[in-house]
Image (cartoon, rainbow, N blue to C red; front, top):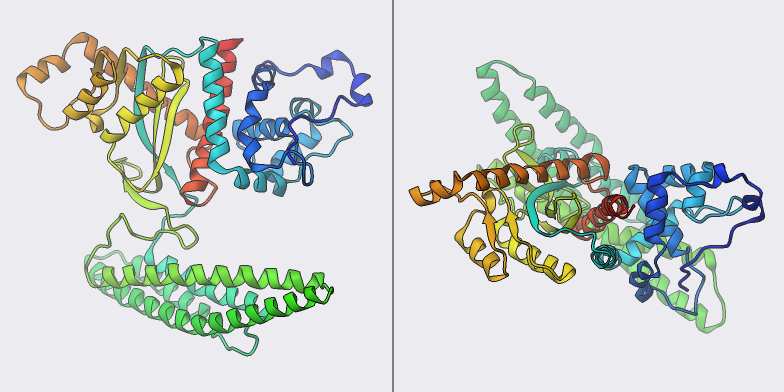
Length: 479
């Protein structure tokens, strides 16, 4: 059951001095923005209005998530800090004698409502700002960046070693839950660890001749790791088949007991653990075979395609993306585009799997901004990655008068004269501010790394970060 408002002020708060009850300036502005019922509408489709256990009040959830992304806190540390702070309790509408929601409750709410609710919240905030005439759209600038997945630098040998260990651990989970108890599963973790250490030792060789020798040895050991992972998958397949049969028998027995009017809560929990472990092992085996196949390709001298390369065992959506940065020539995650205005308000953002081209994304983003604000921007600028004649034509068709985007390749004389005009160069200098906007989101709001898995999870993460950023910016404009 959906609850939108929290409890009223407790007796303890009524006797506190005014100085204690006063919110800091930034929190007071954000609190005034979020005190609009329009922010509850995106959550309505996910709850029954009358039936079920009452949910966490949505005004409390919204404020907790703002604090999480504004101050880059984990769920556990967020709940702990709110519990210990009178100011943050007041901001989150939690009475002094009330209970702060559990971290797992916030996690489940976030996953349950997904990107639909986050996108709805961002749309509601921008619509509210547009209605109050706080959004300037005369000039827009766009840029793309990589939102990294929550993964260390991946190597095929490292992924194979982790896969072998996780297959053994997940197999033990299945047997502990009562599935395939008589099926043996060999633990090859020690053998995989020895080979991984062998690779690390060879990579430390410094001489030129040693490097050539090390490369050959690393290739051989990596091939052996792939063979170990494939044999572990074959063993786990037998265990998985027997575990599925055990799960079906347990479910049939539970249905019979239910028909007889009997129930066993402990058996139900055991079935749930077994079902989750079976699903985990099934997905793990698929990912392991994919990593082993791409390892065989690399050992044979063929570079696997980046568009399909697996870089995480538990997330099949993250991809290697080359953006040309000096410190990080290749990043692993998702590509995101951001469009902001003179005030630094993010008017549009999107996140895509892989490394799609920049140019086709700009016109749809400007079209969405026109729909949200009801006004056509006068000037749109972006970097050379968008520099195509088709992009300028599409923007002019939308009503944009001035498009300031350097062209790719070597421009002709007429184009060179256009790009050397003072007005063109001044707008290009303003465009570089989008790099600062991206840097601010990465340093201050969590865009440097998505802590949720998959494209859907990364979209939830970036959407929540943009919402927190825009609440601060629009609150300052309104104040």
